[in-house]
Image 1: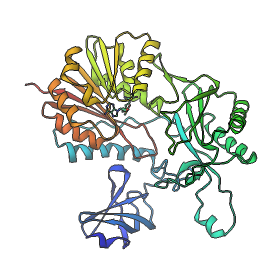
Image 2 (image 1 turned 90 degrees about the vertical axis):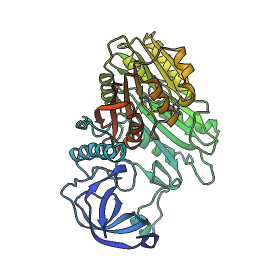
Image 3 (image 1 turned 180 degrees about the vertical axis):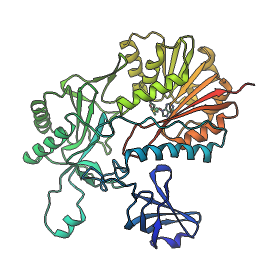
Image 4 (image 1 turned 60 degrees about the horizontal axis):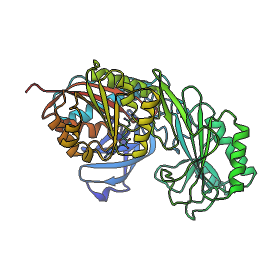
Length: 469
Ligand SMILES: C[S@@+](CC[C@H](N)C(=O)[O-])C[C@H]1O[C@@H](n2cnc3c(N)ncnc32)[C@H](O)[C@@H]1O
């Protein structure tokens, strides 16, 4: 099997199971074939998109038999928008597959003695669960095959999500099931207003156009932050847009805008202007308050984040006497969450503004036993750092998808804290890191949590206890 297989059609391939990253797996001539956007049990013809000696990747071109596992996708944008790719699989099965991904990754990569992986903690809300969405304005709307074939002229301005792997094409979103509250109304009415007023939508190729990006953030109790990014510094156009939002949606509690003349949409280095209301919204969790500013990170599923943090706290088994290190603390949410149960909590995080938020949140919640430090983990977490602070009794670590740097793992092995609670959004890198930590630690609990229904993503919490020496 080789690159020569590219574009070959494989007929009547049986889809057997789901592997990592949500790809489905079948076999052809004893070789693994990864296929996207199908379901286990489907019988399909596929076209090979990548041929390698040990595996192939392929796209489905004809479905002969639909799996009994399939359900009808509920969203009109399913298949074009990259958002909720598992809508065609029932939620019960999604949960089974997510747990199985954790089992597979740990067996395949960690290769250490394991306890049984707990059933995944599912979400009560499988729709409208996100507290943040990020839409793009574009003058290059994605047209369907039927629209192109009709030869008619269509409105090309759009406000929605990127078509997967296409930086220049936007699916015009009519209804998104990911965020509740006024999110759909704000997006749709702003688009209608902009079209009526002939405001220009962003042209990503030529880097022109007034309206560039729309972010909507919300809290469980109904506060809403709306941030509009403008691609031109046009005070009249900006005022027209923001004035419309202010008047039409008085329920927006934080109405903000940014003038972004850069090549990309990131705005951490730009000024955010308050047009109306406050410059933050505030989420609550067990009586704690977390200020969310436009640049702050906050877990995007608030209800499931609470479940995740409860698991982490339970695994930490705190009695009130412990020094806890919260590595990759972000805005210090976990640190704040466990502080009442610990002697002190030390949070470390790369992004300085996040550390400022973490400190502010601790102050706001009248917590006097937290300390936060900004810097790259491998540079901050050193022998010197540890000798200047208490040694940790418990380490909670929640790294990005790439997992922990090897120097950080070596440092954790040196520190030999009695417990490590490892939270991860990528069980593959987590399993890799656990294999390295197994030199001194044994895995005693594994608990997957579903933060993102209708997608293949899975969050996983692992409890590692120091082995008896
Ligand atoms: C998955 S988030 C953790 C968020 C946090 N625990 C929470 O629940 O809100 C990972 C965090 O690691 C930070 N990070 C990424 N690379 C880092 C590094 N090399 N050193 C320190 N922090 C890093 C990111 O900025 C991000 O805030």
